[in-house]
Length: 570
Image 1 (cartoon, helix red, strand yellow):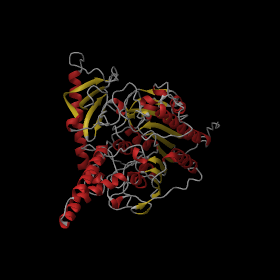
Image 2: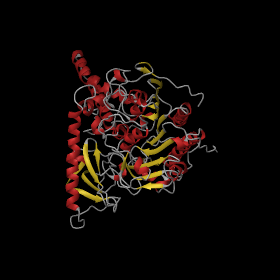
Image 3: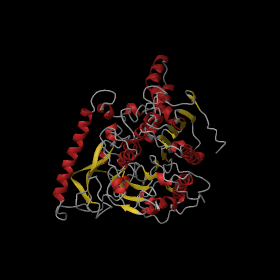
Image 4: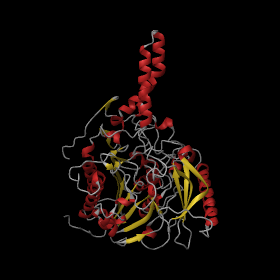
């Protein structure tokens, strides 16, 4: 047991330890109502700090949610919202990512004298035009130190776990290549054979090859801008990430620091760490949650043992809700539980995909055991950190608000009167919290079509989509009052809700103002290296997300990439 050390109060800026789990459902944590999965360390943060019950991700998927979290702005403003079926970055060898024109909270703190570090998942791009330009890399976005996954953990990283990346296209390309190859065997004329081969077989094979080498291309570990492991050894990843995060804190004990600990858990494939295997009541998924809790406890221990607790704001959250469709007959449920809330990952504005844990702990500054039921956003971290770092310099338009008055109990109402919920680049729903009432109205402009009919998710496709035949538009919008109906099971009607017409009118006007702000962004930020038009240029077009060999990070000589980190100390 590590002895709790408060340390003497020091006259310096506070430290920040931000901890984000990947794909964690709000119903997976004890302090949010789960009484069958053991999360004592996370629960302790809540009991010793402030728990937010209506903490909202700006998007229900990794890339856009993390872009909004980092910048304090909806992902549409940075071009990281998709118009098609692909809503996250797919390849490290693509050119899409967080544009240089965007500013992260890490960059703002770095400019204010902070040492900044990111340990874990990034998933916001690496290169733009050449291998090694690192235009999207964490080092270029304010993180002095980076160790971890420039992409993400996904099934392709572990042989035998299947594929997450365009599985349907992979299958079609394989069939096309095989079919054309067989057909060529019957051709006699050599010239015709070569023409067909070059025009059909070769292009299809070129795109099939990167899919078959996904483990090498995407499953890598970098330390700053150097690839140190390719492909990565998944089994030891949790311990290595934890050790790196602890060491970063220890190295910076005498100076103000920001650590963003971005866990690889609990995105599939699920870990099989022997110390946790079979220990929970919910199979491998529960084992992984309890391993996450242990990692959070170790980070808390490190902060306390170094006497930093009273000068360190600790924050715990998830990037979005749990993936409820992810399950199989062998392991069972592999995605998270979103409690009483409808929907989950990739389901637009349904509450289960965007309502996430939000816990702040700061002994001596924040009252222990406080609960805040007001709407808050992951985008609020950006202005909150700026405020606490005493950053008063002019900045770009933010969609978040400083949370400290709410966390400290100096105000009772959130500044978020309206919130906008996106599915890809499409505005999906609007949340309105009228003054003088507990009601939180939400208007769904469209909803994803669940499959099979009557299901609670998109089980046929494994993930919901945001466009075309995959959605149903609502005119008038579907209305709910989340205060009275948090599960979004009883749509409001004009007869039953006296404010029905007012809700429609207010949300319509809010949408107009919001869309106007997107237009003004491009005009006010003008031409030049930080142009709004540049930042709004889509990073999610097909040509930006598909694999380009000349952009592929590699240790060794491309395409013979391969190396292993020296983990003797681990």
